[in-house]
Image: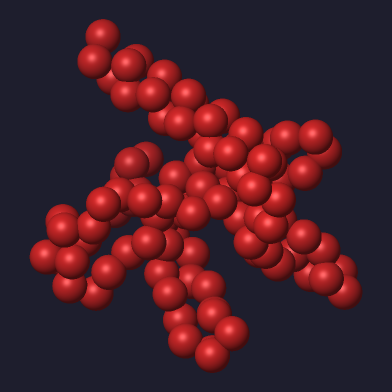
Length: 98
């Protein structure tokens, strides 16, 4: 049975070949590029509870015709994207309270 509230999950490989699981919090089109806000997931539920809730922002890039996620290197752009995502998250939670 599927629920409309199922989390969208993604697994990324780091430079050492280790897998890391994330929940896709949101996607954003900004200046003709696509960005993902990803929340890390932990194997141990206690670690998830203890985490600070920090999310990561990645840019979707095309490498040899294949979509890849890449870290956003520009600090000013990263700050701008963080502000946009934060406003979107805030509006989502504000709507839920009403």
